Image 1 (cartoon, rainbow, N blue to C red):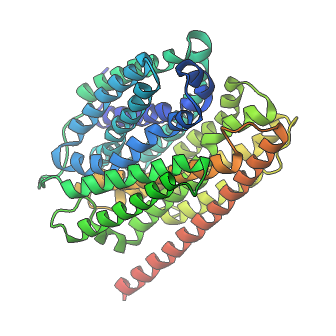
Image 2: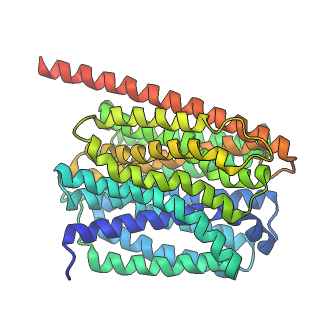
Image 3: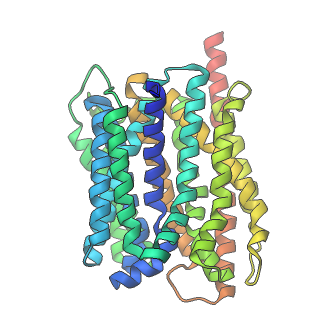
Length: 461
C-alpha cells in the first residue's frame, strides 16, 4: 500500500523529531556508567549532559534559515547522515575528548533535522484541520522521544553496555536517512538569499559561549572562566542582534518581534525550556539519589510525564476551534506549574507513586504546550520562512533548556556528594523554582494575548 505523500512527510518529520529527543535524553539514565567507562571527571560529566545542547542551540536558527533558502529536504537529509556518523563516533570513542566532541556534533546534526521539520509539515499540510492534527502529531513526537530515550538507554546499557546506546542511535539514524531520501520532496523559498555569514558566526559563537558558561557555572558562578564565557556570550548575541538589524538579508528578521504571535511562540518556547525541560531533564538523576531507585525505574517514572504528554498533544487538536494558540500556551504553562507544584515535598523513603499525580498533570500540560508551540511556530512567520520560524522557536526552547538545566543542577547539587536528605532538599528547591517560572511564562503569554486583542481591535476599527 502506498502512503499518501503528506502522511509520508509527517512520518519522516515526526520520527526525526522523536530521534533527536531520544539522542538528547539518553545521558539522563546512563551518565554514571558512561562516565565510568570513559574515566570522565565531574567537569566532563557536565559536558556529557550539555554537549548536545551546544550544537543544538548554536545551529538551530542557522539550520532553519539555510533550509528555507537551500532546501528543507537537503538540510534534513544531511542532518540524518551526520547524526548517524556522530552517534557511531560516540559509540567508538576511545576517550572523553572524542566522545564529548561527538556529542556536540550530535547536537549540530539534531539541529539540521529539527529545524526543517515544522517547515516540511507546513508545506505538506498548508492549512486547516489537517495541519492542526499534523502539528499535534509533531508535538506528540517531542513527548514520545523524551519518554523513550531514558528507558531505551537504561535497557541498552543494562543488556549490552553504554556503547550500545550510541550504536543503536546510529542504526536508528540510518533508518531516518532512508525515510528522508524516499519520503521527502524538496521545498523551500523560491527567492533564495545568500547565507548570512556574520549572523551565523555571531549567533553560533555567542550561543556556544553562553551555554558553556552555564555548564561550567555549576562549579562556581564567580570564577573568571565562567564570567568570561557568560560575558562573551551576551556580547556576541548583542552583536548578532545588531548584525541582523542592519542586514539586507537577515537570518532572523527582527521585525517579526513586532508580531505578538511570534513573541508568544519564542517566549513560550523559552519558558518551556526553563520551567519544564530543565526540571524534567534532571529528575531521573534526582530520583536515583533521593529514592534509591534504579536508572531504569527512574526512566519509567519520568515516562508518566512524557507518556501523557504524547496523549495530550494528539488530543490538543480538539482545542483548536475553541481556544487560540496563545491562550492555549498560557493555560498549558499554568497546568504544568500545578503539576510541578504537586511534586514539592519529596522525602527520602517516599514511594514513586507519590509523584505520579503531579507528573500526570504536568504531562498533560506539556502535551498541550508542545502542540500550541508547533501551531505558533508555523503560523507566526510567512510560509516561505517556516523553517526559520521553527529554528527560532527551537533555539529559544533549547537556550531555555540550557539555562533551566544549569539552574536545576545548581539547586539540586548534582555531581556533588550528598545525603538523600540534602538531595531531597535540593530537588524541592528546583521544583519550586520551576513552578514559579511556569507562572511567569503563563503571565507573559496572557500579556501577549492582550496585545493581540488590541492589535485586532485597531485593525477592526
